[in-house]
Image 1 (cartoon, helix red, strand yellow):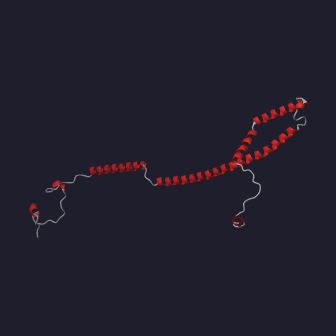
Image 2 (image 1 turned 90 degrees about the horizontal axis):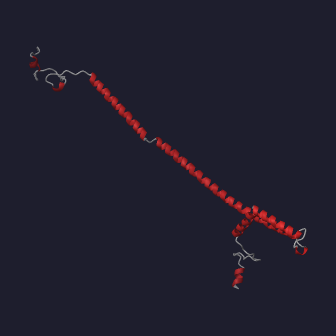
Image 3 (image 1 turned 90 degrees about the vertical axis):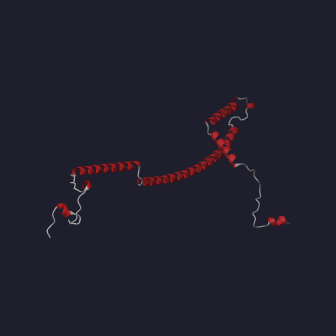
Length: 205
């Protein structure tokens, strides 16, 4: 009773009914079909098939009448070749479909890799541009050397000008009572420090 109620429930899908066909592995069948199609597309298959048909014709033509299993008009051979063609065409199509699927997957993978490579290339290009801009504002070793050399030349030139200026200036006369040739002080003459006594006369008042 419980099983009948469970079977009548509408919120659960029904189990499929009918003839159950044998199941097979599509991948294994595809590899098998590709192997057959690949073998039929070789020169060996054509040569072997030609040899078999030639032997078939020869046996059913030259052999005794009671030993011929497929006499003239070769009806059985025609049936065999028709059966071979009827199976070969779907197998070849299946192999082509599998190859098409592989090509599509490979194309998608190539497109994905190309997109990633393009993104990486653009990123590297931006990084290189940023580095070039940054390097334009950084003092390099050659720049520092040139600046130091220029400063050294300017200092040498300034020292040479100073030496020439000192050689051109005449020596200043020394004043008695002053050590080291110091110039006299600019002050008024008076009697407090003995200026008049040193000169020997006083000014008239």
